[in-house]
Amino acid sequence: MKAKSIIILILGLIGCSCSKFTGSKEPLYIGDEISSDTTHNVLVAYFSRSGNTEQVATAIAEHTGATLYRIEREVPYPEDFEDCATEAKSELNDSIFPALKDTIADFDKYDVIFVGGPVWWHTAPMPVLSFLKKSGYDFNGKIVVPFCSYANMFPHETLLELVDSTPNSLHPTGFISEKGDTTGIAQWLDDINLKLK
Ligand SMILES: Cc1cc2nc3c(=O)[nH]c(=O)nc-3n(C[C@H](O)[C@H](O)[C@H](O)COP(=O)(O)O)c2cc1C
Image (tube, rainbow, N blue to C red; front, side):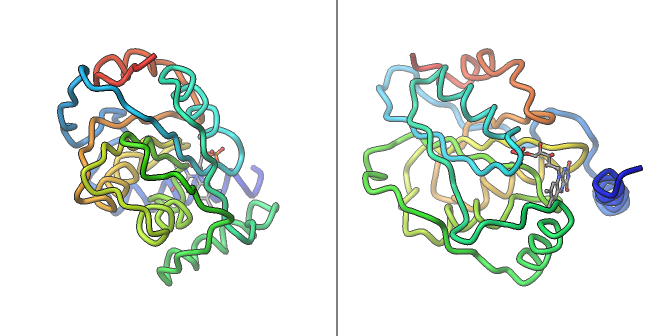
């Protein structure tokens, strides 16, 4: 078994032992109701290392006519999986919010912001939390829609982290993708009244 698979397996086993949550794909929170009568300016902000979340973000943008924005760490993570995993873990353990590569000048014009990333060490990668909590963007009163991509564990906790990081926003039910699978996105956007195009 390759080293990468072993790490994912260990993450899964740790997850089994300390979470009461199951592998169900249903989000654990009931999303807020959104009015479909309003016209929205939509942004899809995502972090992605290996392309899975990017696939989901692109599909959301295609269905909603949104602007796509890639969240990037100022100093990229190492290419090597294990080095990246180690660095991401210590960043998480030490609550380090890494600087991001750039900023969105016209952020205020967006009133709907989809925010997503992969599950990393049971939660959202720190650059996504930098984007939500440390970049000076005002999410108050905006609609923040969480989504994530995962391999085998902790997608719910990751969505909840994104919700908790924007406490004064409205949160429709989020979207969970297994390894970048985009099946069901159109239906989900209909369900939350945000299939805008
Ligand atoms: C550092 C690191 C930690 C990860 N931790 C988890 C985890 O806790 N649970 C999980 O299901 N997948 C975990 N994964 C796998 C990714 O969430 C999954 O492969 C995802 O689809 C990758 O998305 P991306 O291609 O957008 O980067 C981890 C991957 C990396 C690199």
